[in-house]
Length: 395
Image (cartoon, rainbow, N blue to C red):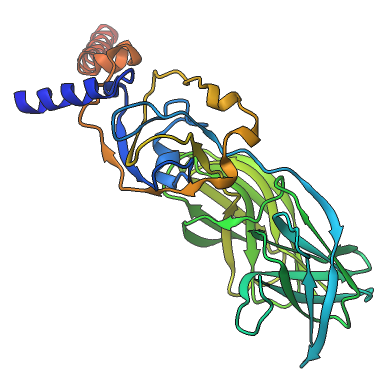
């Protein structure tokens, strides 16, 4: 025990101005030296740290504290027309190649000009810097549609991960032609990614209830995607969130629909929960066939200041730790070097050997739970004895 205490003390001293005994969890972060480093927190980190990470501290290989901040969002790029240099059509699929020219900023979407009034289809976008056969990399697949009637909706924009490829190959099904295209970047509407979860589906009366378990508390999600092989339906949906699996709060309520020409299957939410409960009202119809419900979230990367030596060490899970303040956090995005950041790899989480629970953070009842239990039992005995005496008096 003395050896463990000595090692814990040495670890705390080596952290410079960071008292490691305040943090319950630790994990390594590996990356290339010199550059700013970007990494994506995982569900375990969201669950064990406080919201927005005020209790996160990062040390470099020499024990020096590393400033960090949420990665800045890049500037918005207004919608800009691009030249279509090649066209084709084969087996019902329309193909065009968009040439962005020599000077090409990073973009994350392409807006297609489609002459059809009513259609439903799918767009596959690929990118290349040479336009030679076999050089294209697949970027994304996006549904497109345009419907008229009780529900009017039109979507002809394909979203993909940010890229500076010069040539974009677009293949679209379900349409007659693509007459033009424009590219843009909107960091405020990033491409959503699936959030890992397990699910449980039950039937409760005329409703289908799906509960997603994201594994840890406070995991952020931005949307719930509902998919089914049922060809046509219009159903009311209620989405709720919980961190304990028993008490749920409402997140959103909306209508999902699928019929020729439209597929409205994504519900926007703003949640930080472990459990997400999705209730689908089936009315007098059969439950949706091959139902799949998935949570989605936008990336939320954190950025470390450059000039520090890896590997890094993360410390978090401090109940009484106040948020750090860094000059790095106040810099304009262009001064952070985020556009040249390298990706870091998070290692496995471990309990921090130097952690010491704070007695000040606990209540009187938590510190004296044994005494409270004894007092409760004694109180129950007193009440019982009083009842017996009262009964004897009546007798």
